[in-house]
Image (cartoon, rainbow, N blue to C red):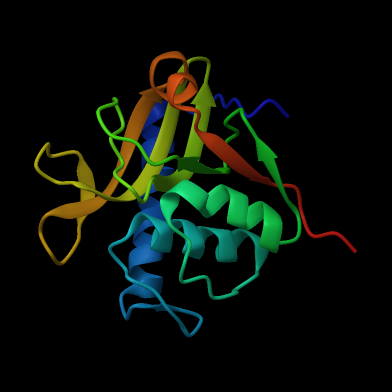
Length: 171
């Protein structure tokens, strides 16, 4: 599978909104299966998604965005690292400043919803609401969870995003 999809943009956005609604409902209390998480952080969203997909609910309090993919590959069964985005994969962006994706020291992480040529649709948490780009605003009013389209050639490849792709549990 090459990770591309023939779904329309509105279908992808609705799927992303449904995923975000499920997340908000699941962790509105601040925990995932008893694992305390900071609801408003990017890693909390990716951690919840990783648990949803793989059924593995290990507690990882040190999962910052910049190491999320590497920690997932090292510590969880069935995940493989890739330099190419695939629908359903988790992404990490390393620590950086002054780029198209300034992430500071903790990096950033989220979920790939769709891949359509150079256009990648992602869902991610702890993004600025000032640009009006979030679907759900977090309680602090300054950040939210959003669905964005990004360019593989202009935004992903130059900043060395990495991806964790779930291949299934191994026996």
